[in-house]
Amino acid sequence: MPDDPRDEPEAADNDDFREMLREFLSGDGDMDPAKLASAAGLPSDPALVARLIGQLQDALTNTTDGVNWDLALEQATTLAARGAVPSTTDERASFESALHVAALWLDEATDIAGLTQEPVLLNRSGWAESTMPVWTQLAEPVATSIADALTEVLDETLPDDATGMLGADPAKLLRNVGGTLFAMQLGQVVGQLAAEVVSGGDIGIPLSDGDQRQAVIVPQNVDAFGAGLDIPLDEVRIYLSVRELAHARLFRHAKWLRLQLISQITDFAHGIHVDTEQIENLATQFDPSNPDELRDAVTSGALIPPKSEEQLAALARLETQLALIEGWVDVVTASATTRLPKSGAIAETVRRRRASGGPAESAFATLVGLELRPRRLREAAAMWQKISDAVGADARDALWAHPDVLPTAEDIDDPTALIARLTATEPTEDDVDRAIADLLGDETGDRPREE
Image (cartoon, rainbow, N blue to C red; front, side, top):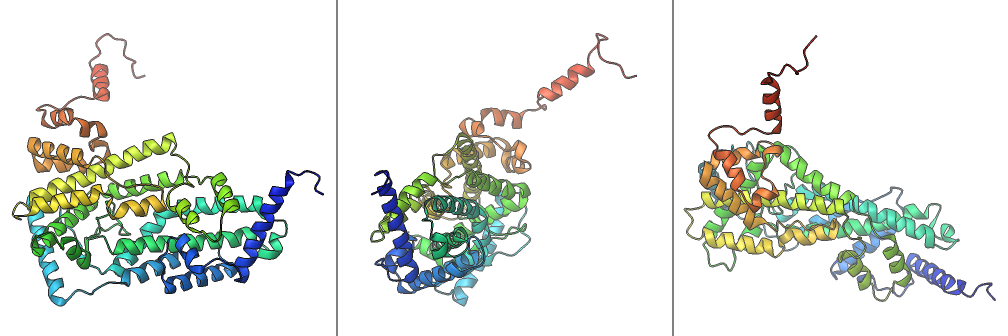
């Protein structure tokens, strides 16, 4: 008889957990592999299920530690290739013509210089492959946090004989299993996005890896976007080409912008700490016959605690910057596409698509606990239009020269003061200028003298 009856539930939990691990490792458990794949966010596809089980088995003997990013890339490109249709020679020629026209029209709407590299047409797998380095950079802080929390919980809850069951380093083994599940989920998300995005800037941030900005168009997805709009396809191709070129030009011109934006996202992600108590509850209450609860806990954000004050402030700054970028692109695109009879209808379709979340929301919400939705897009676009009307495109675009002169959230609320500064006939003085002027104009004799 136990010395303390309160020990019985804990002992039972340990026995259940030990038995579940043994069954999983031996392959004799009742858990349906398809349900396990569903819990990992993968579709009910026999090939994907087989790949998941194979990768998990490899993870049990893997000598590395952490997330297998190569697996994420393999998963993404495999999914992206499904349903992909190669562009014909005529279609590619049509897109190249659309991009040429878009560049000429954009030259009339902004003096920001054109790109030094030719735009590229990518299929879905090519988009997934070219953007994966940035996706892994954004997702790694959360992946590390999840792995650390999982290891901490399992170190505390594993039975004493776990080392014999799982090997000399159970924590490392479990991190590998968790990293495998995370990598396959990342690959699933990027693979799905590859079937939705129309261009390189469609997500709102530059996903190309490197210093040179290059415009990217995904022809199959552009044509899918235009399907059912009752708008000539040539107009849709030109309009989306203008948007993509404007986005790429902006990031090439404001060389500081990409680093600042990516840094804000990763700083936010580094602040995320997975709730170990939630993981512990999930582990002890997990029903192998119902793995949907595991998937729901991961994808709903239930494991991520409420945002801290610092994160909320960072999120506000990030949302403002995204709104400024997208608002500027909207205004410049509208100006450059006045020749298109249906440009207004295409623009409204783009806005509705973005307002409903677009392709970015599910990806970042799942991977980083962050929604990249420019909530103040319309207000930011209205501000940029007022600036254009007041001072012209050159002075408007000069505001991207340095982060210190970029409009603020207050300017989006009311651009009156900003426009007044831009239209002032005499330069305005700031506090430093006034202090220097006062010092130089001091005639009291109290000013310190140089020895």
